[in-house]
Length: 310
Image 1 (cartoon, helix red, strand yellow):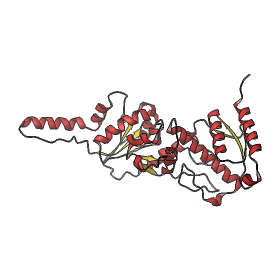
Image 2 (cartoon, one colour):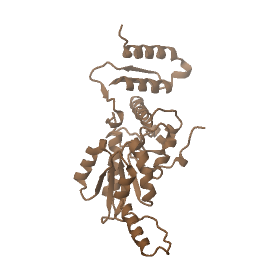
Image 3 (tube, one colour):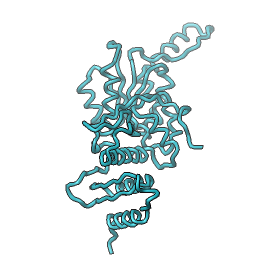
Image 4 (cartoon, helix red, strand yellow):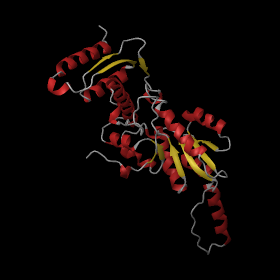
């Protein structure tokens, strides 16, 4: 006999709702009625989130024509929001890296891995004057030394040292001076390796990335590899994630986005706009009219500033 997740979840909700009603605990709690089509993964997140909220609710996952929540939550334009979370991150990065670039005589170095070629090509079409570097999965350090002209600096030192071996010369490799900032477009496996190498040579140069660079990390403490990179994400979200045990940071970001969606639905259905509630994934108060812009800010990664669960 084929197991029906929808039937199981629906039965569970009815049971929990009927068991949780009590004048003392629920008369003042807002009701929430949901009609959502989505994947089994997202159904599970929705149910778990609602149960944690101890809210009296009803939900229908089988009502065709209702709001469709895509399985890929991070790249979906969720109900009430203007754009997807990743789109907002990338837009903020583009604004700060390219459009607000102060020194027009210097270049932005865009370092990207193979799986982000389309995004790099899109940026190259818009900003062809910048420098684009496809990092390959082999001998990362030699590639980085080459793009930063570290080897050229070392060669000059060797040639100078040959002139008089009696003179001791202290040498610190100089990198090219025409780079204003570095934009990393990679996943976690590549990022955790190349970012520390770049940082060892390119001290003092601002570097940026979307949160995608650490999505596959399983602990916020592992962000130590990305210290001082500017990431468009709220510190509140990072602190919330740091207090949870997770298989991947990406999963907790998905949980946060769905939690925000349910919070906004609760506000709309119960007219709670005066509560001045901020979504965990953004910095702008939830208002009645118009779509919600998360108004993200750039967080400079600092594992020392994260409030870990004791």
